[in-house]
Amino acid sequence: MNENRLISSSLEDYLEAIADLIDANGHAHSKELADRLMVKMPSVTNALQALAARDLIVYKPHQPVVLTAAGAQAAAGIRKRHQCLCRFFEQVLLMSHEESDATACKVEHDINENVLKKLLVLTETLVSDPEAEMLRKKLSEALAGVPEEAEPEELLALNDLEDGQSGTIAYISVSLKGMKKFADMGLVPGAQLTMEGRAPLGDLLRIRLLDSVISLRGSDAAFILLKNVQ
Image (cartoon, rainbow, N blue to C red):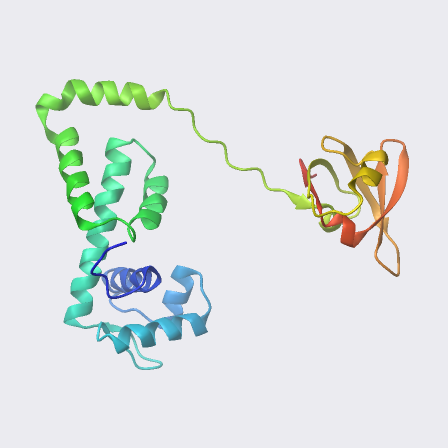
């Protein structure tokens, strides 16, 4: 964390978004902030009130948000951190622009100024110094050999399966009581099943497992997670 920060990482995001919107549109309204940060209006109002209390913005309901001199200076520092990190991730680590931007958003709040300055020197040296050409080539070759991390597969609880949908059991929570009983029924990781339907009343689900149809309580099915749902 930055030792001298006066605002939280969340408020830094708001301040950065305000500056970006003003640069792009000439103004920053509460609704625009809500859309940009994908938050609800009450959260925006609370954040703007907190920034106004710190004299970083001028905030009046139903009017554009205005940065004070201190707010503009703080926003410039936040955006500089973001741009520096983006450049390092994109030009040194050869990440895509989208991934660089997303990663910078996560890192920028916790990196201190001393580390940031060193990253800036490293980036400038590797990118611009002619004597670093051989190192750039070796770095590029080495990074090309780093395998891309696969996106984690989204899992769906069995009780959320729609009628007719199928899936493969990926995981059964240890919180499920009577796991041996369910294992004896064939409900084990790797088993493929299909949602046949739900009882009109009550909590029972009808699950097809191989050539059998079994009944399962929805409250128990919530502890069984599926992959390859289709």
